[in-house]
Image (cartoon, rainbow, N blue to C red):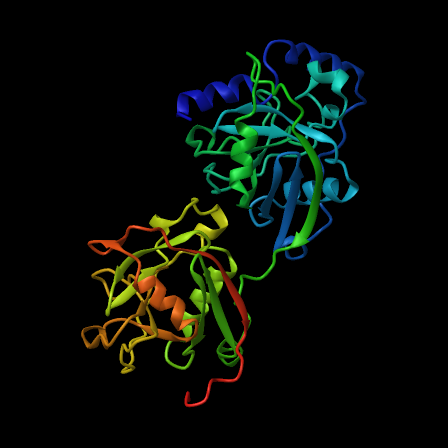
Length: 389
């Protein structure tokens, strides 16, 4: 969404345009005198490392809460979530692939749709920080012209919204499920941007942020594991050389646990040389935001281990530190790769599957028949076969 669209959204859409001002004025006349702004009793430390899991009628997304940036907003959001105050409310406004707005307590009642966007406000002072209003930002809705009017309602930026920067309190950021947020934003709306169907927030649950996959295991514990590539031609078991390339092993296991390799093709097969896979550009579906966050490059961990048949090594570009997700299985001795690519494992089962991949017809080096990894299963490594160190 372009900045001028975002500006028009601010002007009228963070409350209902037209009849909203009248409804808000009526609500103010009926409301009790304003109370002191909410201030949380929780410390920043108590709120740090927390996430909100937002279950909706179109799926689930997860928000990393940011108490360092907005302690009172985070404290109030957590309080409401724990009280069940969001359960049964809706995302009542949307700009397609722009912004979604929800959390109004009035939206529980289908008969009060004309007032959606006016409820639950006027509770919080603004807490502006350097947090940008970029894709995934979660911020408090305000009454027009009233910077200290935040409350229960919030909006999520589906795309970058630079025109909103500095005007709204950003108190969270979507860590998982941005594809769900996109689906919510694409719901049908009327001429005023009101969502036609009921996009229900079924429940908001506060939890501790789970540790990153394979972030706490020791190298020895990683070495006791193996990966099983479940391919369209059968299973291939790989054991790891954690003593040679601990960072690569941890990185591979983390990507596998996150499902990064699901639906990735073997995009390059050179008989007698290598079968290469793991490239995100050859994945059936795009990565989620959480998966993408773990796609990083690795410094090399070269060793003197020869690239022999069955060896598993990390692919890279011209830069030795450019390895990311792509890896290859050696189909024969490849001395030209020795000391230039990071060896991190070897095939210990399913060599017949590797041979089947090697036999797939190719156009140049590209398989004519798609062979893909459907899943990577992580399990404890059995005793090494006889004759293996």
